[in-house]
Amino acid sequence: MKKLEFPNGIYTVLRPLYYVCKVFGLASYSYVADRRNKRITTNYGYSNYMFTVIWLIVYIFGMAVHILELRRDDVDSKVLFFVKMLYSILLYTSSTVVVVWVSIIRREKFLEIIENISAVDNKLRFTLQEEKYMNRNVMFNIISEIILLTVIECVWIIIGIYNTASEPHYIIALATISNVPDICNALILFQFINLVFMMKQRNRQLNKRLTTWINGTVSRPIYLNNGNDRHRQFDRTDDHVNIIPVFVSSVGNTEGILRQTDIHLLRQIYSELYDITCLINDTYGIPILVIVCSMLTGVVLFLYQGLIYLDKWSGQNVTYGITFMLLFFKVTLFCHTATNEARSSSIIVEKLLLKGNCRKECVEELKMFSLQLQVMTNEYTACGFFSLNLRLFTSVVSVIVSYFVIMVQVK
Image (cartoon, rainbow, N blue to C red):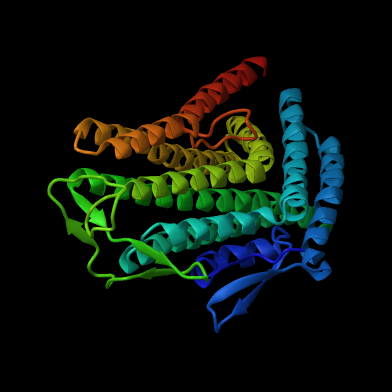
């Protein structure tokens, strides 16, 4: 099996999320650090599937036991019983599908995405400050997500134990384990969100290069060594050279003059970013689809329960529903902003064409780039069924309100 390799910096950023996912069976591989070369290789083995198998067994038996317990409970409303049953089935099914798809069927795709992002980084010219800033933002996002998930789940587990303190021990254990599928689904969403965020950062850097052309500044050239590590001919602090006016030429290597090859390089970078977006959709499309279905069903259930049990558990149920909606909002928001960042490249290219100070061969290259941007649209979808953006979020909110009103009327 092929061992993927990528720089140590990206591994450091993703390491906290990796360890948490590993515990919940969502990472069936191990990292092997090479400190001398500051790179990371991956290792696959049967021992890496230990947590995956354990949680698969828990989800399968947990769903059966949970459904049996629901049938024994006295539920006042048939609508509430149906929604509870549907949510339980979707919750455990989504967690099972996520573990099987991400950890077994597509176990190499996550690292392949990271490797491809590293290849793009080798072609994009980052200053040291830019690289640290991007990594710091991703790290902050991951740490904050893990802390919030830990706090929320701990509070929910404590409340669940308190509410079932008088019940038999197996009921308490079942109530505690029932929180694990939510954790599994949230971790997959965190993986997806942070990959989308990293893609947004790379598209922003590409747009920044295009914008410097409009403003009359040109980044110094990049030189790649055999190890595909970024090296610069000049000091990092001297980033740009002012030129008046900007003429893009494919002839010669005059310092400070844009060339046709510069435009072609950005076309290659955008093409690789498009391929990574397709790979992310292919890897996380099915998990995102089943998780979204489970979450939105949970929102309807918990808000409806909060209305019925207004004096008893209304606060807990409403908190559940709002938390799921906020998590879904974060997914759609990150995908929406990343898609808009990629789309803004076409606007910048059109502005370059309108500026009219490029030579003929560069105008042709820019026209091809414009056509490429129209054909290769970076968009994040849930297995192709719907696009993940803020328009989806508003549509979902209206649908949830409609279902909620219908359920109240049926009651």
